[in-house]
Length: 312
Image (cartoon, rainbow, N blue to C red):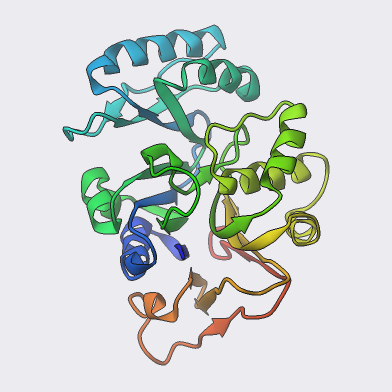
């Protein structure tokens, strides 16, 4: 099951509210957990960090240890961290930091305390927020509907293999590549083979969710010189499974669908804006009847949708 969604606005606006609508319409596809990747207007310097801690009673110590590691890598907080005000044991924290000397080396060390405080995303624009519960519950807790930006992804999860945990939900950040996130509907059957290959190259995975693999796999392909289009095409040829996924970066959203064509995706593209979802009825929350639906229902399909009105 699972429901995925993507949204691109012609101009910056309440992209979070649109994604909540798209995912709420697909809550029947999975409400174990829900997540959003929101792309704000990119910062000229510094990064937005979203992280999840697992013991609210130790929040202060977790942030102190995180801050120490950050300073060891030549960066610091630009603004004081802020966190959610719920009574849940786990917590979500947002930090604005200056540029580390090396993001991969910093993240490698920051991950040494990931059992206490796990980095969910790093980006000039990207913020990943995810939690247990359906779209409306997660949106209310984390104030998603008030988040502004240019584009983003959403996901409603029905867990079929890995555990239902706040940090096991989608979207996944392409650790350690800034500003890259994916949402996925399907199953990667050669997940462990690919994971072991990427781990031998130095990449780190923090969950057993096969979707985490896709984000790192695509980003690695691009890091060795491939374009996004080439990486999407390669994923269909080289990754086994049944899948439809969307991958986002600062410039827009890409998509790939396996050669078996089992997992659906439909889109509407109008006047510089774009909307995608697993089901047409979700798109109708944003666009009225009469807007033309494009159904990506064939095998081995890819597409890239850019922020046409906002590409710098």
